[in-house]
Amino acid sequence: MTPAPAPPPQTIVIFGASGDLARRKVLPALWRLARGGHLPERYAIVGYARTGWGTDAFRAEAHRAVREAAAASFDEGAWREFEGSLSYVSGPYDEPGGFARLVEHLGGVENERSTGGRRLFYCATPPSAFPIIARRIGEAGAQRGARIVVEKPFGRDLGSARDLETVLHEVFEESQVFRIDHYLGKESVQAILVFRFANSTFERLWHRDSIDHVQVTVAESLGVEGRGVFYEEAGAIRDMLQNHLLQVLAFLAMEPPRSLEPEAIRDEKVKLLRTIRPFDPAEVVRGQYTAGSAGEVPAPAYRAEPGVAPASDVETFVAARARIDNWRWAGVPFFLRTGKRLARRATEIAVVFREVPAYLFEGQGVAPPVPNHLLIRIQPEEGISFAFQTKEPGPGFVPRVVDMDFSSRSLEAEALGDYERLLLDAMEGDHTLFIRRDEVERAWELAAPLLDCPAAMETYPAGSFGPAAADTLIAPRRWHLRAEGGSL
Ligand code: BG6
Image (cartoon, rainbow, N blue to C red; front, side):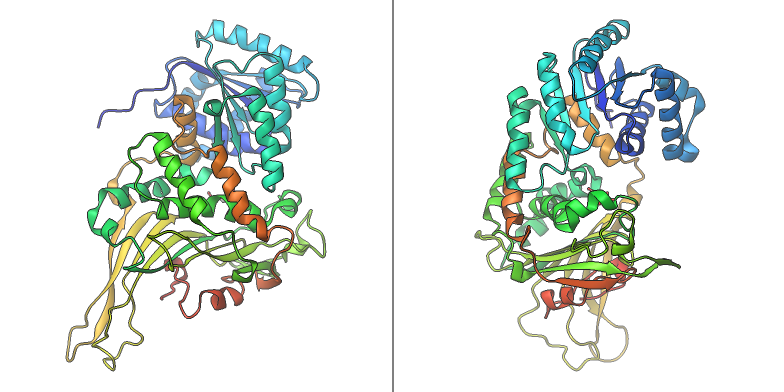
């Protein structure tokens, strides 16, 4: 395979460079890209934040963060080389002086490292800072030819999302804006498109005549992990359903795009989102975890987590039925569920096919019949399996469920991590895996009925698979999760 050409020379500016996102995701991803030879031939990385560091302190912090993330693969010699690309400017967001200094610094760095004038502004700050950052960039006249990367949440409802978009668009053209939903950076989510559109067998079956229903589960074993204050403003509907789950659903259900052009793919996603009905609160289950366990150790209730109100009504679990009003999917339910502090971490999709019209094997020892189903495993272990029935060896005609199984491990190829892929694409200027403005707005329209007049709250013990009401929602079908050892 010929390696992809590296992106053109450029400078990456990280706003919020002293914060959590920069430390945990952005800097380690840039380091891995550098190690894999994916960064431009000439590049510079400039951190900007309020924290009063200089370049040396930034390099020391970045060194710590990257070494921690890279663990055994960390290489001190390669770090020395990478470190030369890092510099830092400390300054505020709420007055223009800091940005003037930043722009001056950028000029110097671009000269010194011959990176040309191309700039990628990465907002690794809380979303509340996005508008002011965009304005400051505009005031400094630094938006020309630049790109800006922002990450979900894009607002907290349709109105606030539109307000944010208005400010972004006062300064930037849509073609300059890269909105991250990191689920689209995952190899196995992108693989849905290849699986669907490169294999005629399944694509022929991919509609209401053959498919009974589809399930998407994003189960997390972690709790809110010190993000209680943030999570109190979000909850599972805003944090996961409105974005990650709908994005996966869009890849699963969209029509074939006319090409791999970014706008061809994004057009199909938006078209699909427009055919989904806004969620009906009567078909949604919200849940919150009570005390239980996390593996072997006791885990506190959500309401006892730091930063969480003792009587909080914020959901840590949501299950919902999505209805798609188009010819391909009419009458085929898509069940979505996600939760924190569940028994296991697993993101899986189950595409469940219709049963045979008449079952010949009643009374042969296996009941009820198990429909064919395709399991697409997104994480932690990526792969695809197809479950079908064969004959149990021995007397009679006893059916037995078996799997045809593919694990991506067998490809023996190094995958790019989600942030690596998205950073690389943003540096290239490729919008395919980024969310367009109309997608964000449509996703908020779909979630709107669930915001602020939500369904009753169920509870579930930490370490379980969520509230029983989620089973009622999908009945008479059953949730399936391979990691759960579940069957249909
Ligand atoms: C983030 C959410 O967008 O996605 C987090 O804000 C969540 O609450 C995370 O834990 C899950 O991502 P992943 O890649 O670990 O499945």
